[in-house]
Length: 114
Image (cartoon, rainbow, N blue to C red; front, side, top):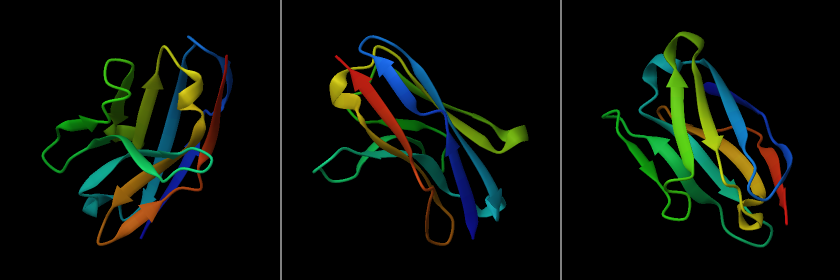
C-alpha cells in the first residue's frame, strides 16, 4: 500500500499560480506510475499529468504549456506547478500512484476566481 498526502491547494485569481505537493509513503519502491488527476463539480475525474514507468510525462491537452509535473525522489514527493490558471481549472486535485493497484490521496481543492 502507498499513502499519498496532497497539499498546496487554495483560492487564486485567474492568471495566477499554485504549486501542489504530494508526499508518498509506504511501498513507494513498487510505484510504476504517479501523477495528478482532477475532478470538477459535475464532471468525471480526469488525468492532469503523470510520470510513466519509463520516466516520461503525459499531460492533458487542456493544461499543456501551463502545468508542469516534477518530483523529488529524496523526499518521495511529486509536485504540480500550475501557471496561468483559468476558472475552468477549478477542481479537487488528487494525487495518484499505481503500485500493485490504484492508490489515491484525499484531494486538495483548487479554486480559480475570474
